Length: 141
Image (cartoon, rainbow, N blue to C red; front, side, top):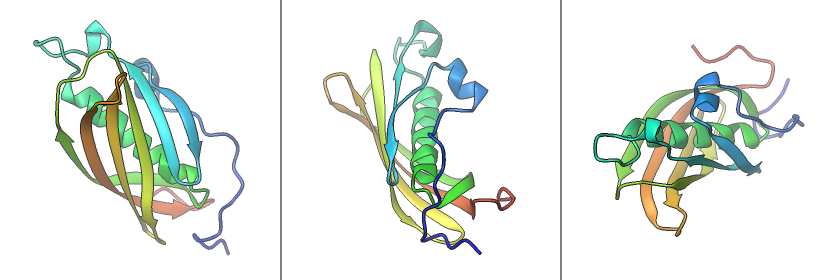
């Protein structure tokens, strides 16, 4: 029986969602419950004001926190149960999401993340709760 407190060796993480790949998300770093993802805001990602659409930022944050949860080595299957985002300023150019797991248990993982621009200005913050299942278990319903 695998306990969630014991990391299980896994291969290198990679972005697997075709939706995220279509947005040109790049995984820059991952490990020990953290992940850093980047995206270059393109014209197709913008709202009518020329800024990154909130949905793009939400997806980047959600994906980064999910990757951080997987990078903890304790879970592989997960689903977003709750996602809260605070948009602080408009985003343009290259944006980077920095995510970390704050706590992970048998069925839930709690995460935080932030999005920074190329000048390290804080653009958005987020918190999320993920329903998690250990390696080899069925995905959460």
